[in-house]
Image (cartoon, rainbow, N blue to C red; front, side, top):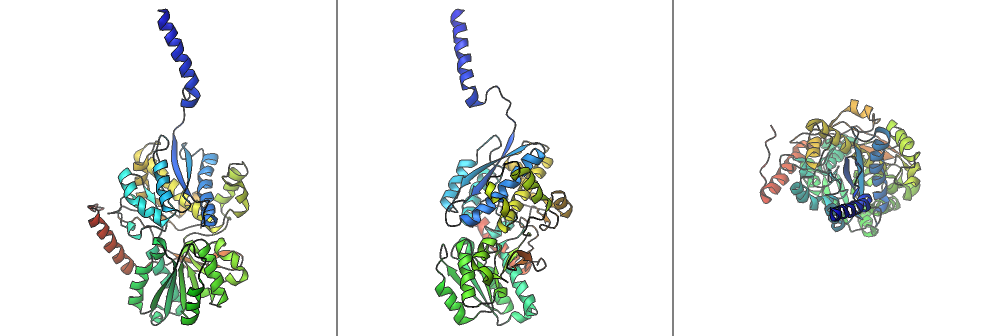
Length: 442
């Protein structure tokens, strides 16, 4: 009997000693794990930091102001990728099983990482949202069940920007014989719009030429000498990081008209134009949300996140509302709404990746919901379906006025004839190569 009591006492003492480490004796609340694929280091850090801050601040706002989503707190798990594909894959493997929920979604913020993760998340059953980047043909939800790329793809954006150019020229028929060049980051990301622009050139009769710029993009003298010599009518740019700054400076040095120079929405931030000073005035880029902090949600972030000392980067306070900050914020907003939708569909607060996938596929953030979220007029309504993982596909054009970005156009419909055919061809080829049977989305 005495031996039994001694053993019991020893076991109890051991359990008490381990209790802090194991969380014994405490009722830990269920948390939803959301990884943050950051790149706060490396050559692209100036663009990665504002996105990561906007992404994280939104989740913190929900936790601080609302107690989470339907009372469930969000645990943001940062992992540094340095915009490196290998590191990005390593981050995925490190974070996918974190917490009771496991990672419920991914936002890789890199086309290269996205391509590598598509087969992995499909196997692990975790939704991946490559918001306006990544593999364009993933818009076909019948084949890419776990991948979402709303609110628009690179191919849709390329065709929308060509529509904008056509409008500026006086009609699409006026594009015949015009020279439209693409200056692009020589990577999977930069090459994404090429096929679309080639098809559109054939359709409308304009002259297309692609000019690659190698990573990180600091050497562009030869590119802009060629542009000065060949005198294209319009330039499109698929750039990132320092490449954008250098390109805008080089364009200014040869006196290329800035209002005929249009960047992809990843080439349209404050970081891209400010280094060129007054010479950048008039430069254009694609857009799917507004710049600035004049929205209720931003005021709430300052009140509940920064004023409470909860910001991931307190020194960023005066930059809240920058384009890339807002890009991270809108990505987190749509992700949080997917989680909220998943809870409703499955009637549970303990959602996992498989549930959140359904939340993404049934996402419907209309104008009324945007107003409730404190983001009235901030971005376009988004509705996703089984077959359409791109959502609306609408793209606007914003312009730098020397002090701030302003949307200066309507939202353009993509050329669905051209883009739709390319998506169908590429996605069906992927399905065949990977033995994927397309889903019936009727």
